[in-house]
Length: 343
Image (cartoon, rainbow, N blue to C red; front, side, top):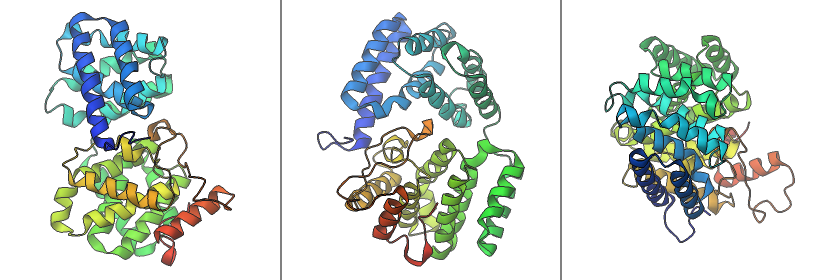
């Protein structure tokens, strides 16, 4: 369970991060790989395996702040952690992918971060990453910030969609751009524009999100980051859109119900418990659990695994996944007027 003793999942994540960070700092002084592996496994045992995607992010981000002699120990460290099965290669990939997407923010603190991360990525075959994953990481790390041209094009695509309601055209236009690593920007643009306009447009965009997911036009990790970015800027959004929190709560709930977001999003999203976005996450969790949806994640959204984990009590007599989705969508009020749920 995400709340074994009633502690909030955000607080558990903070404690987990503190525990792994302390172990990593000691590693950068001693280079004792076995000890770090032991402490990571102990932390996962206490706080839960769903936090595995956090380990790589924490260690590499701390490593970027270290001297070069310490940074050079990152590759042999992850080679050890994957060989000894403390981490799986996909979990290392997910952590590196997240950092690659955030590299422009990291550069503010570590000006040479792009080159440093590039060195780790180039050696990532040593800890089990495939050539395809390596290319993905290299592409995102070297070109992570959408250009003005890309942002303007997304704005045009979404304006046309809100006028025409043609979901197929959005997917076609996005795929034509050949910029899959900017899927998060498409999601962020669509939702922020809809929230600024009307609830009717939000319903359209909720259906668009479901459609982009069902067509696999936007990758799971891009979907994750698009919603995460909106939560992180919610304070600012609320200045222009007073009910932004309510609208974003509705959008995230709809995305989880249709499978576009895995329920692990509620646990793994990067927010502080003082953030306005954190309140939205807690509201979504309560809303889903009230309708019988199990928010304990069965897998990480970044690994591309599952999306649904239903409590038996809520779906008694409901046999297919599609029926369960419709049942939940109806319970949440998303199905009313054709909104939100379908894939």
